[in-house]
Image (cartoon, rainbow, N blue to C red; front, side, top):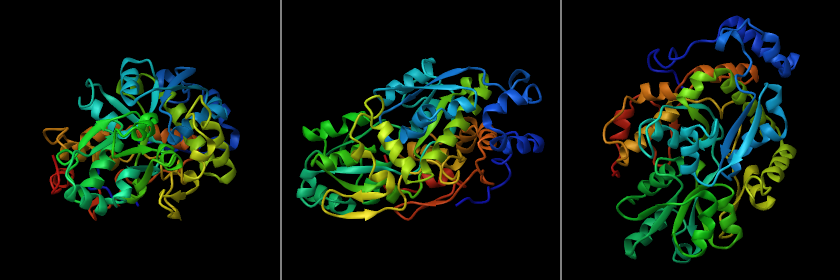
Length: 426
């Protein structure tokens, strides 16, 4: 749910879309989006007087996860061609690899962890480099998996995990996928909500998503936080159970983003707009119905992409969950790629939330200028242009309000106070 922004700063941080341009782009679907960039000719005021993408082909890095789907499907379905650009998906092995290739220009864009982009921008979790978030790719759909060994001792959720760790003292090891990333923050937030200090009461390691299940199988960890399909895969393989879904930590939380460097966004704004519009339309296609979701699952299960069985993907994308202990449920807050555009807007408050957690866990020593950093990174102007081209609704406000699992409410209004409010911290 969007809220009224405090003051006018967030709303005026980006240049507005002119009425004429908005009207034309809003009609793009009716005339066929393949003609958008050619028919606009020199009437636009974007790069060098032309609206055509500056680059005809772009390489987008992705990690083998279900939430890479809109990037992949934009390419597979040929939606990218409608916007005058060719997307070449590039399968990457780890988030540090994605980071390095984005920063050095080997990748034009990436399906990437929200918190990774913010960390690099501030020089934590890698060399400092100005970064850009063009859109949010998905909401929800991650989970924290606990080992079957823990479950056998009664640790099947937050309260029972806290009880076991307090009564049976040993070194407990949990894995996340990148130190400043989303999975680290979901894991830490969840543990802390039950009085467990993840940095003091456990050992936290970093493991690439596709290697999580194999590492749990050989006993390297007690639990992990990762995206699908690897949580469901652990259940299918009989080695883990779902302790909590991330949508139960924060309903409709931000997750992966379309990221690039700040330099790239400035140099190639038309390309950024075209790619964003294509991925928006692909997300809309995925969310349109059961048949499309099943087609998506079949496509991304291929070894070129996620490299797993279709049945590891196609249940949870429909909200059909099981926890590995006999419990099944239909979750209305499953992974969404579009949801009438509610998924994709790069809310300033979403980006700022990760900064508050980076401060909470000692990754940032001092409070940054939360709003200014979010305004630098989140390319709301480019997003609005892409949304108009793809006929995607845009919210009125750049901040939104959310209630998390511990009852705290985040609305982006006082990030410093929020960051300092947690009893469990570094």
